[in-house]
Image (cartoon, rainbow, N blue to C red; front, side):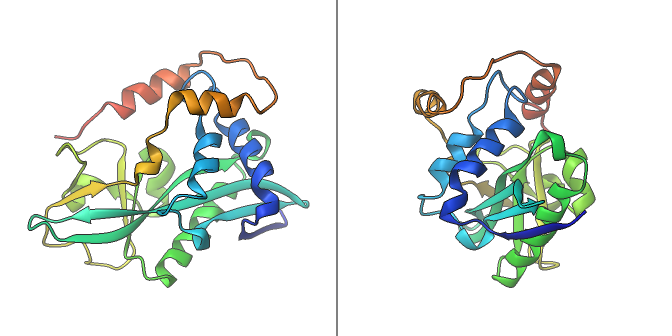
Length: 212
């Protein structure tokens, strides 16, 4: 497979939003809003342009990963900057071919080279533990409500960076989307049928699960 990875450019914006819509449509909810998140993220102060990558296969964009700044706050109130990614998208026809893995590997190395010492994400452990991510409880990282979500995953880029503290994870406010605005933005795309799938129920269970 002749896959290449490069930074996203302005000419890629619409194509990336369309592939993101295809990748997430009906996956977690009927329809999706991830393409609106991508659109909103690019102009947000927390966006990290240097960690915005597209995967190219046969001269076509088939995958994308985007990062924003996030923060960890320790028990004394000291705040440190980290990175988070999402969405990560691969066209359905190209999934399970290592494209998502290539995007993660490339971008986490770039994040390390940019000075980021940890990446914290929300995701399914099955998809990310193979890339070195561990549960947040292993690093004593709680969410803003003081809980350890099953989906909160951590990759330490600098070994030992997170040791010796109790942390709270604060993600960018860009992830708080206005449903009405997302619906209005989706109307600018070709209509697609919203449907229920069992993957949506699995997502609801996992997203509401916590580690004691």
